[in-house]
Amino acid sequence: MGPGESALGHNGHMHISARVDYGMRALCELGAQHRVDPRALTTGEEIAQAQSLPWKFLEGILRSLRQAGIVASQRGADGGFRLDLAPDQITVADVVRALDGPLAAVRGERPEDVKYAGASEHLGEVWIAMRAAMREVLEHTTIADILDGAHSTRVTEFLESPGAWQRR
Image (tube, rainbow, N blue to C red; front, side, top):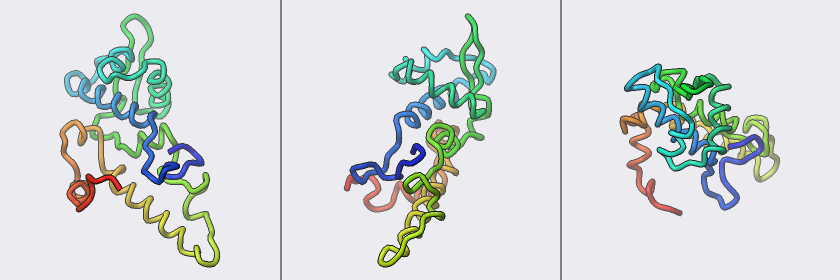
């Protein structure tokens, strides 16, 4: 979510930006390479091709991930990208925050800073609970977990909950 965006898109669905989706896919590629050789570099073009991503858009994403200390880069003919941290040290929350800002915002403000009156007095509590649920998943899921398909018990419970896989 970008600054000022709601966790829910305009149609009421959870919104995961293309930047976060592409960034996670690129990090999974780099995570797989890290397991083979932690020092090896992969070009942005190779990442883009492996994941069918537009290179020019991915380039800016990788730059943001580098600035956040998640990836390292080297210029030149033998240049490319690699993880700057081990796959088990990079959470999905780290990536969302690096690319889109805070996990949850209400009109650009922290949920605890938004005040409601009258009939909506307790609405802020719902936004705070939503942020806590997102944290439960995003802060406890790493690149290594995704590569291994090994989710935490809580994430597995969410995946197995009635209706989790149904659109509403």
